[in-house]
Each structure stands twice: as structure tokens, then as C-alpha cells.
Image (cartoon, rainbow, N blue to C red; front, top):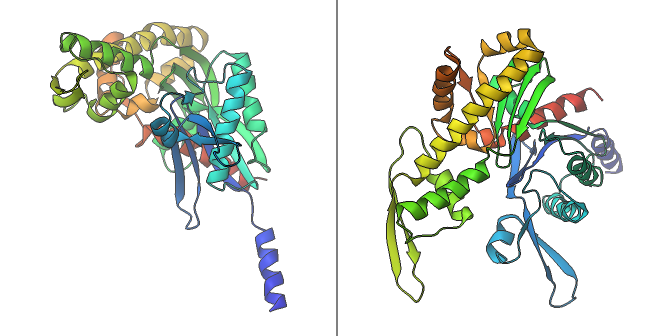
Length: 355
């Protein structure tokens, strides 16, 4: 019995670090790691928290994710609305949030962690994010970070890290920023970011268009608008849908939405194509002409939450082709909203193997 126990201890002691991929997103945080059966497990939660006092002990308690948004809508806080923790207070909130996620899901300290981070020219925000990462309980073996658009492109090229050996362009269509970069064998070139074209702005546009379409009878908040976008946004087979709101003083009002979602998505995609074709691509061509030529002969990879909209890849492809007066191809990973985390986890796996 004693010998078997010692053998088990030795076996456990030889287990290597667990490779973990993390994306701390402005709307959702996603974590990926290998499960007991070797299959990839994912944790997906809203990036928000609410605090309350324990009625028995008076100690502060933290509630995060969907539970916080549902139970404390009056004081729930989304810490990364701009993509990064902007100040010390938001950095502290992000630490509380991330520590709670790590603890509740029992993520191992003995791990190698790769973070998919946005390409943003914000030194203070990046420094605050670094403090969150460095203070985390996970990542004892190693901690690295890579551009979110690179990580998100990895699943689009195959089952391993084929993207690291490619020359291509990635467009990250996120909630808080539109990013575009060229990649040459893993090297990021001519990174471009704008906060003027975002998934969050689509939510605001939908809310405004709903008010217009219903002639002022219906006002919705941006969370409801986001739900409309995620449930009904579709460039291929959009169908009008109905919803019901409660009227002040009682009663309800049923209304039908025919164009508010599609109009907002069309406006968004036109702006994406404009920024990509007339701002990013000329800068890339000016600085890296050969990479520009090679990359446009390969599929452009779309990543981020907005790339999940059915038909957006084909629509982007057609509109960019018209704008550039040449045929271009576009592609996206199967689950674009999870792709950055999955790609980060694959990088973590390779780094852990090389320890």
C-alpha cells in the first residue's frame, strides 16, 4: 500500500503545467484549458461583477458574470468597456473579477497561461492589464501575451499553429474596437485600431433605429439591442421578429422589427470596409508593399464577436472586392467569439511542451 501511494505521488509530481488560454474581453471573458478527457473545456462569462455584504458576517462578497448582471442590474460594473482597465479602480475591479473566476473554477496554479490581448495604443491601460495578469493565481510556469487578432486567426488555419507560418491579414471585429493587422510568420505588421467602429456602436444604432421604426413608441436599452443583434442578426436569412414591452401604468405593447437590425449591421459593415480599404490597406502598402501583395492573395481572416453574424464573411468579401476593384477572399474560424482563447491555448500548449 505504501509503495503504491509513493508511486502515485511521484506520478502526480511529474505532471506538467496545464496550458490555459485567456481572453479578458470587454463584454465576455473566455478561458480554455484541457479537461480530464483531453478535450478542450471552456469557461465563458460576462466580464462584470457586483459586490454585496454578507448579511451574517458583514464581509464583502463578489458576484460575477451573468448572475451579477441578472441579480444586481442597478450596480453591476463592466470593468473593460474600453477594452482595458483604464485606471487603478478598474484594475482593482478586474482583479476581483478574475480572481473570482479562477477560484470558482479551480484553475490550477501550476499552469502556463497565454493571454490574448487587444492591439490598443493605451500604455496605462496595458500596464493595468499587466498588473491583473501578474497578480493572478494561475501561470506559475509561464505567462505570455499575444495579439488577440493573431490568436483568433489560429483556428481559421487548421488544428494546430499553422497560422504562425503564414502571411495574412486579420481583421478583429470586437465590441470596443476594430483592429486590423498583417502577420508575417507570427510577426505583427502595421497594426491599426479604431474605436469609432465597434460592436457596441451597433447596439446603440439598433436601439435608435427601433425607436425610429416604431415612431417613438418603443425604447430599448443597449443590452436588449445586443440580444436582438445576437439572436436575429443575419445577412443571409434575416426574418422580421416581434417582441413585447410593458407599458408604463400597465398593459403591454407588441411590436415588429423589420429593418432596425439589418440597417444597423449594414451601416457597421460599410464603416468597417471603409476603414479597412481606405485607411489600413494604404498604410500597409506604404510600409510593407510585398506583404500587402502577398496577403491580399490569401483569405482575410475575420475574428471577434461580430464575425459570428451569419453571412458577414461573404458580405465583407463582396464589399471589399467592390471597393478595391479586385477579387478578395475572406474567412473566419468556426466559433469566432471563442477563437482568440482557443488560439491562445494552443500557443500555451506549445510553450509548455518546450519548457
